[in-house]
Length: 64
Image 1 (cartoon, rainbow, N blue to C red):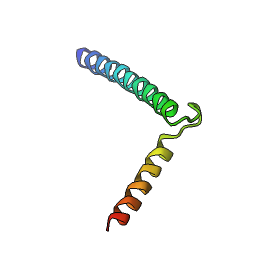
Image 2: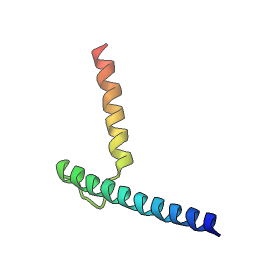
Image 3: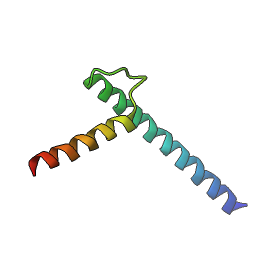
Image 4: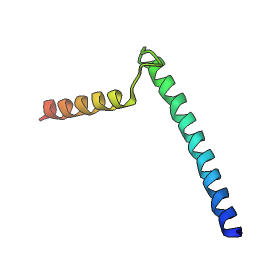
């Protein structure tokens, strides 16, 4: 029973830590949306990263 309590507490702690990390990521995403003059609710980090990746690839190609 002690092992189960320890595992349960560890899971709860990990869940709380994960929630904090998601809250930080969400805050940073909102700051990024403001910086890019985008709608906070519509900004997709996946789209931002894809755009950055495409820009990098084209930039490196232009350097060559």
